[in-house]
Structures are given as C-alpha cells and as structure tokens.
Amino acid sequence: MSDDPHSNPNNYSDHSNHARGFAALLPHKHDKHSDHAPMPSKPCCDTGGHRVDSDGSHKRVVFIGNPNVGKSSLFNAILGTKARVMNAPGTTVLLEEGEYDHDGSSWDLIDTPGTYSLLPLSPDEQVAADAVMGLDGEREPDLIVTVLDATNISRALYFLAMVLELGKPTVVALTMNDLAAKQGAGLDVNKLSQALGGVPIVAVNGRTGEGRARLMAEVAAHFDGTPMPKGLHPIDPHDVDVKQWVEAGADARFDWAARVLAQINMQERDRVTMSDRIDRVLLNPVLGILVFLAIMFVVFQATTSSLDRLRIGSTAR
Image 1 (tube, rainbow, N blue to C red):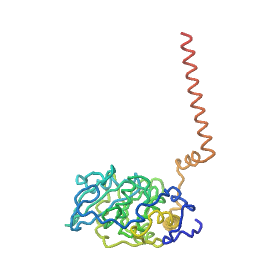
Image 2 (image 1 turned 30 degrees about the horizontal axis):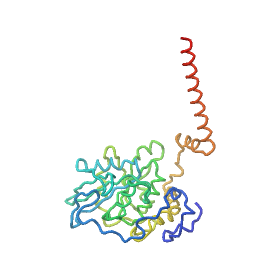
Image 3 (image 1 turned 180 degrees about the horizontal axis):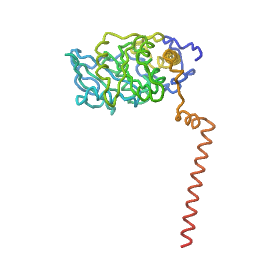
Image 4 (image 1 turned 60 degrees about the vertical axis):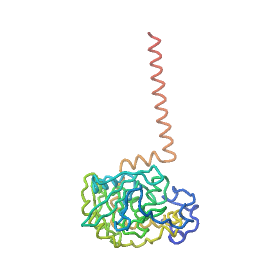
C-alpha cells in the first residue's frame, strides 16, 4: 500500500475523505464515547444483569471474533451446561456468560456477538465493542480471547490488530485450520505466533472442543500480559475518539497484516478458489450487470414460454 500520513495512530485528523479498505465501509457518525468521561463499572451486575463477584476477585475473560468463526461453539464446549444466555442491558442483544473454574480460581467468561470491527455498525456489534473495550459502563476485561478463522486469515489479522491495540492481555484461538489445510493454506501456529511477536496462539476445533484445555491453560498463564507486536501501538479507548482511531489506523493495520502474511509465507500459498473466480465475475461492475441481465432474460423467456404452452393447451381443449 502507499504511504499514508494518517498511518500514525496518534494522528487523529479527519480521515473521512481518505478511507480505504475496511475504513471505506465504516460509518461517519459521531462516536458516542468520544466526548464523555468513561462510566464507572457496574457495581454488582455485569453485562446482561448476571452476578459478578462484588470484590472483583473473578477474572473477566471476553471472547470476541468475526461472525461464523466457531466462537460460540468453542465457548459452549468450554463451559458446557454452565453457559447462560441473557440480554445485554437495555437491548435485545443476546449474550452468553458463565463461571469457569481453573485450579481453584473462578473466572467470568463472556461470549460477545460476532463483529467485523470495533467501530460498530449494529446493536450487536455495539455490545461486543463495549464489552471488549470496557466502555458504556462495562467492566474492562482482564484478558481477551480473540477467535480467528484460519481460512480467512487476512481479514482475521486486520481484526486482531484492532484488538491488540487495546493493550489488554490477548490469547488467540485459531479455528478451522483443518479446513485451511485441505485448501493448501494450513497455518503453522508456532510460526504465526513468532510473526506476531510472541502472542500466544492455540489451534482449536469449536465443533469438537479439541484444544480447549490448552487454550484455557494459555489464558491462565497470560493474565499478567502478552506482547505487543511490532508495528502496532497501544491506545486507551477511554482517551480516544474510537471512530477516528479505527479509521486513521486502517492503512497501517492492512500493511501490518501484509507483513505478517509475508513472514509466514502465506502469500506464496495463496490459492484462488472457484468461489473467488465466480465473485470476480459477478461483482465486476460491468460483467456483473451483463450476467444479471442475461439471467433475467432467460427467466423471462422461460416464464413466457411456459405461459404460451399453457394457453395453447387450454385452447385445444
């Protein structure tokens, strides 16, 4: 990508006229957290009104990830029948939570709705962003489990960059690596962790629960902190305009993700699938319209021909 004067995340000038990539899809409404001091954490009840240890002795672990990456399946495999579903306060958005016991310690696990960005486009994404950033009265997480899809690692790394920039201890749960391997693009977890500067990564299977014990062991070992990869810069979401932070750093995050992919040689193994080829045609501004018109013409011809046959048949009777 070309150099961008906004790539420094500390430069929060207006980015609305130079949004590229994911930033071009982001809303330009005023961020509701930018002009207000952070609200205090809820004293007795956490997201959804469930019990939280009043003295704060329970560690809070928030699970976050893109939609359809196996996050909720993994969460349920970890908690089993201890998982409870409830509404986030003041919304109809559903959350799952539960208490997890590990070597005599109790943690509060929170499963958030799937989201593509920490700058939300929907109420579900707003709840997820607030939970992981500790905004709007939410208690800040002690650790974040970021669930990434190995079959879409490019987009996953961009999302991970935003989460890592929050400066919270972060453990990565890598799902669907078996499917990625079948596509010839399986990931070496150790190499990926090295490329991320030592951020802990565990390969898991959300359907079977494989890897969950190791994942929770990594969580237990990293409450004191995890590395910040080179090229990313920590921020405090209470002290920045979230909209400007997400948009101003978009190009830098894409560049960072590209460097990580190069380090693990993913660019050399990038394969174009049949779905990719179809998308290139159907999403083309010229070819896509021509294909659409051709399909509509065939449908029209088939419909009129069927009606003509029915009319002729009824006349013959």
